[in-house]
Image (cartoon, rainbow, N blue to C red; front, side, top):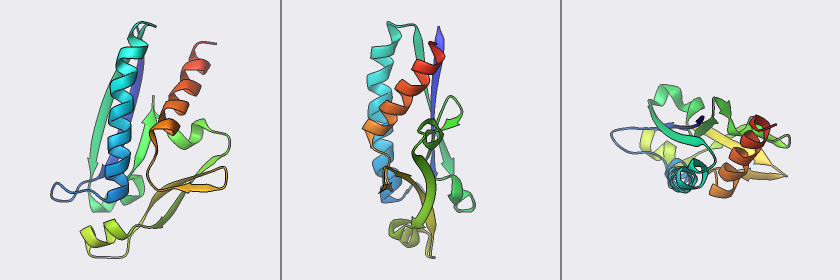
Length: 129
C-alpha cells in the first residue's frame, strides 16, 4: 500500500485555537475522512497527524503538509504569506502575524477543503507517473 500522510499543525493555547485554524481543521478532517474511503480501493493508506503548537511556534501554525510537502509548494501559483490574525491576537494577548496562502490573487487565511483535495490529487498524480 502507498501511504498518504496529511499533517496539520496549529496553535493550541489551553485547548483553544484561532478561528482560521479551527476552520482549516474542519476542512482537513472532512477531507481525510473522505479520502480514507476513496483512496483505499486504489491502494492508498491515509494517515492524519495533528500537531499542537505553542505560541512560540506561530510561524508553523495553520500549516498542512502532504507527505512532508507544504501544501502551497504543490501549486506553482501559490505562496506562503502572513497577516494579522485578530483571533490569535485575542487568544495570545499580543499582535500576531499568522500564516496564509496566496493563490490566483486571493489570500486564504483558512485552507479550504477543495484546495486540500486538489493538492492531494497533484501529489498522487506525481507518484503514479
